Image (tube, rainbow, N blue to C red; front, side, top):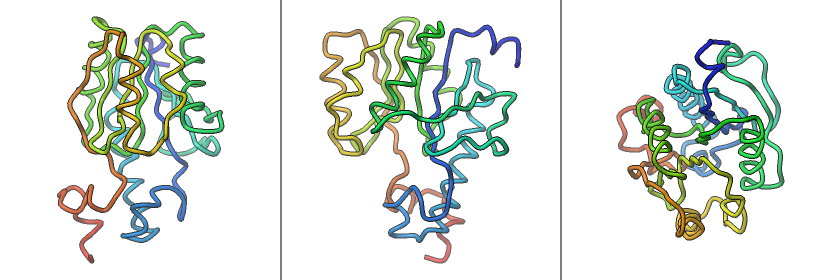
Length: 208
């Protein structure tokens, strides 16, 4: 383990799906097909590795199904765990609880389908947590692409319609009396419309 990472009190949680044909990105696959959807997801995973591998933080990859020992997530850089819980909220709560129980002071969670995200954005989120208790990256679809905190607030992970456009609004309601900062709105990749005019995805869509 890199010495600086081992002594960091910053923790980045990366939630990811095991990339398998016919699983994940179902809304995108409905338009572009299973193979193209998988190719795009692998492209997004590669991007997530690029923007996180050099980040000054401990990093844990949480797999949706099973831990893969030999894949793009280098075990010298990333700790690997499996998501635990009956829904997304329960799985995220468990990951945050585990992080705080092990002494981390600033914890940020992201998914693995954000092309419009950089290492600078992640560093900024951790810096924001030096002045506030919560940081949120609002997604254009009404959810969020990033959530960070210095103290655990379990209600952020309950009574949410995960995957719906009400998640951000409901989360902000839970935080109405808390110190928080909102980052810039970004677009995650769920639908064909999210990528159809984006040059980075043109090679995947050239036959459409």
